[in-house]
Amino acid sequence: MASSDKRKAEEGLAEPSETAKRPRVDETEADAPAKLSLKLEILERAKRTLQQKKEFLAAAKKAQAAAAAAASTPAPRQEQAPAVAEPGAGRSQKPAVGTAEEEAPADEGAFFDPEIGHRGGRRMDQRRRGGLQFVEEGKFQKQAEISRLRRPPREASPAPAPVPAVEWWDARLLTDKTSYGAAAEGEPSIREERITHLIEHPVLIDPPGEAPLPPPQPLMLTKKEKKKMRTQNRQAREKEKQELIRQGLLEPPPPKVKISNLSRVLGEEAAADPTAIETEVRRQMGERAAAHEDRNLARKLTPAEAREKKLRKLLGDPEADPTTSVSLYKVGSLARPQLKFKVSLNAQENHMTGVGLAVEGEFTLVVVEGPPKAQRRYVNDSGTVLKPSFRKFRVETLRNAAAAKAFLGQYNLSHYWDLAEASVPE
Image (cartoon, rainbow, N blue to C red; front, side, top):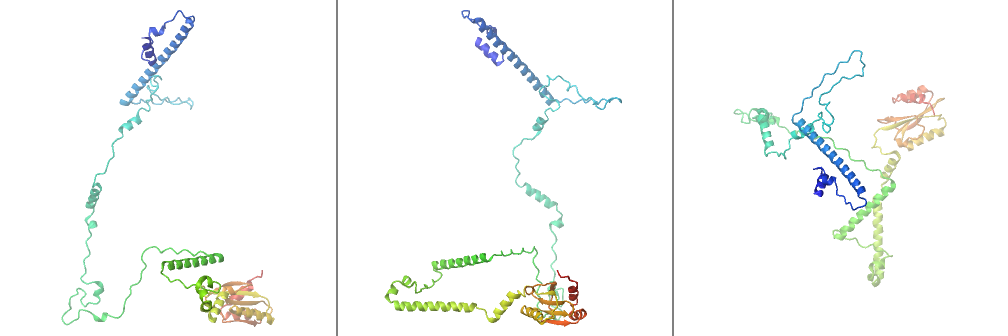
């Protein structure tokens, strides 16, 4: 009985019994009073713990009941009008707003706030919790059919254009432009004078669309990289040739026999008749040398091609830029024949045209026309013209600046002299 009462006391379902409160004391023990006081203290502590648990369970039940009542029938808020402050009152005073529910004791609603209520719970309850909603078969087809029926009939089925009795390209050849039938009796149905040998080609029109992007520019390689690319290409061609020979698609070339590898290539044949084999090998060597010389002669440029190549290297490619570059040189006096000869010879060797105007007591203006690679130093002004104004280069000696300007005016180049006069040497 004592053990059952003790278990009920620990579970909080019943108070400790008298037997538990008054434990049996063995009087024969010497320390009985000390043990009795210790057990009484333990029982008092357990009693206080059980009382606290009871109070906590009662408060929790009250809170649950209040929450259920607020969720089922929420009470309307009774707002109180703010109190009007007195004219002389301070600005720090605030209107008193409150309700009777807010002034309730703290122990009644310690675990529930009526301002919040169960709004989140009500929203969760109102939310529809259904399964997956599958679209029925043919739903969208029905919608499309309904929209098609609601469309105006003209837009749904436009009336086809009537077929003409006579096509427009045949009407100009027929006597009767309304039908292909025969004309009146005795008159031809086709106007033969309109038929000529002229063939009209339609104008070519580019197809609609954006123009294709330009191809990528080739990568500029250095001299060492170009040499490496040539070596790799040659090795690739040789490898492809060896593969064709291995597959039997190409006949293998004859062995390149020389005096140095005669015995290694021919073997027993060289030992059987060395004189005849040596003669044959020397003949093959001569043929290979002759073929090599022929290939070199085929690649060799003719005198005209060599001259053109030299001029292209000296002057540049004339087809790349059809315009002609013009340069003005402002130099000192060319009174000495040696200086005139140097200026004329340099212009002729560089295939340049122009004129040199040497004015007594003034500077000398040299006008040269030619490719940019032929023009060197002392540039006073440069530009481009559509075609050269002079046929060759020569030096003219004039008396004054007016005569020089008049000479250039014959070629509509009088502004050259003005540019030379306005320039200041550096």
